[in-house]
Length: 263
Image 1 (cartoon, rainbow, N blue to C red):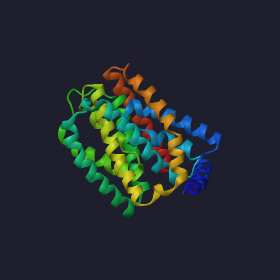
Image 2: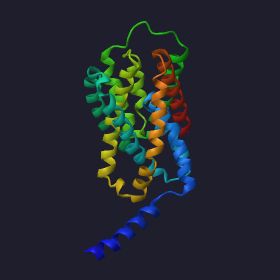
Image 3: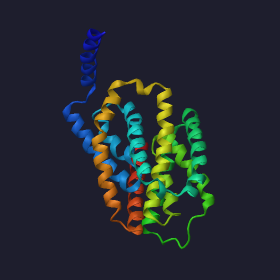
Image 4: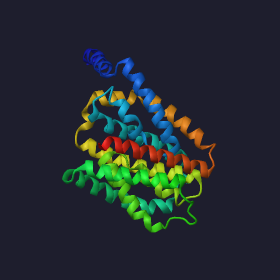
């Protein structure tokens, strides 16, 4: 038995070492993820839109969204565990059922409709909203809680279809909540649930049987943690107005990225 273990262990270590990205690719991916998770730490979303174009130079495109789903779930869960009491439970009760329904709808639409058409329409909507939020007149009243259903469903739907639904939740939450920490933790909870749904689908589809992707994801955890730490400390220094403006800037960038991706 000991001889079997002594033989199997070096073989396992050799397999894991071979699955690691090259040093150059690892540095490139780490740099991209630090920037992406700084934005995630500030706005609560955006990793796929920011990091995907860079990651595509260093790893197969088909592995990017599944890998980011794992890292996003870890990042969002860390936020929630540390600051669970700051989340707005009333908003979560309204949004989560709609999120789950939207995720199921998104999965069905992905199989039956042309996603490029939906992606283009979404991109124009996001850009128009962000521009209006940045330069338009300020709202004098909060968004009605009745909007939780369409926003929750849209966030779940686009998360399932494109891996990028967090900005939809952000639009709703920044129009509803006053406290920056409540917005940030509630957003993290929604992202965590959304990525858990996606990761579960990838798991059942056998995507995570790829050892190379899993090893790469583990090797990039330090980059994710550094980005989250920087992003969190940035938000601690922001007023609500500055935080909302930062989120709207990220939303606009996300819309532009979606427009580029849809053509």
